[in-house]
Length: 547
Image 1 (spheres, helix red, strand yellow):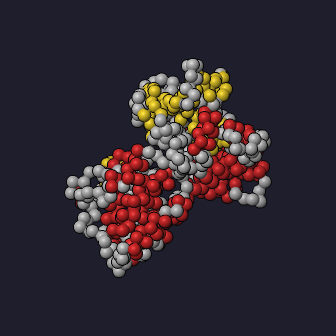
Image 2 (cartoon, helix red, strand yellow):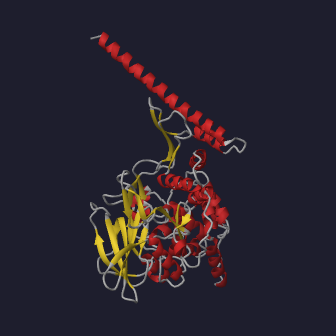
Image 3 (cartoon, helix red, strand yellow):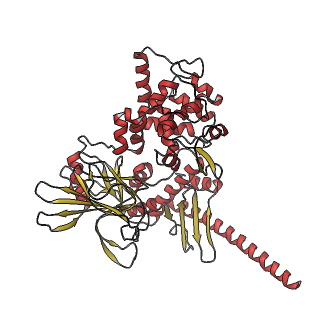
């Protein structure tokens, strides 16, 4: 199950209740909540239950409303803080209903999600371009319109209707004006068993609920390092035995994998090799046991002795510990025989076992190959390997990769992503690497969000294009005389995209044009530095003449 689907399961009842009261499509409310709160994982939503990015107005503050200080369009802006997510949903509805800018939306049918998304975007809810299209994509990709139809059917069965002649509905309670602190939430989780249960458990597609993967993913886990001998990430000159698998993640909930589990060890010391960690234990009928260990966590939500069930959140991924080079989940598995002897086993074999027992369809992909396949009895041993191009597209298109590349709302960011992916495939093709080497390079590039362009630009000691935390493309180059590190302009990205997407150009021609663009940027930077240096030297000579 994707994060979008998990969010919908959790808050669909709240969105439908708001639709019944205000006539706002539940699908639109859910899509905005997903987008504005990053599926409930944003700082505003975590610290202030603010799922819609609503800022604190003077009226809100005057009436005693709480707020958070957060940098958005401007530094240190004040955003509404709510006592519950339900309050945030209620205030979102009032924000739209009592703001004249959105009046035309309330003249639309409550199940016209396309009209609503266009109206909200046109009224200026968000500053980014393509906001309506992005919301519609979220709605259609996750089938959120079914909640609109459910409400429409219920209203019809109850003989109720929406009043489309004004900016209100017949069931609406408009006693609270926009900007006032809310007296009470309109929907409480305790009145909704499914919603309350989802607070404690992260659901996935388990038919019997007895098994779960350690991270919630829609189609696959992105494995960055498998079980076995590898180059020591802390000392490249050494080899080490890697007693687990590393899974790409970004502040994800970590989950217990079976029912009947018991927490047997917890480490809260970040200054140890594995940082914050948890070890779970599961008993087997033959008297043996299986232990699963989660390392490098940012949060631990259980204590030794706790009993847990499959899919229960036990912590949050992070980057703690003295032996880590970036955020990931190290997942290890150990078997303990009835006589007490133990051994580390490939976690892929364990995941394959519980996947078959629980009918879990997700894969564990390392360089495009499913690590679980060789341990599954129902998978042909000659399963065809994915091509490098297919692996790259799968990585960049799926939220499960943990890539975090922005899409959909900003044309500059989309150009940056297009350039990033096109340069990645060009670089591995120019290098003439074997398919498996290409996929390994692609995996590393996507994981690190950086493409090594040194092979494309002759005369450069180093050259790379990376995607920064703000989603912008950053060129870094060193020709031995000058070092450049700066964000590419929209004009440069446009020229780069035009070159890379020109089907009439050969790979070598593309390489030459990319090299020309990079060299031009470096030469321009060098000329600028030479000018500044000359000005400083001239200023120094002038000062010495007047002493």
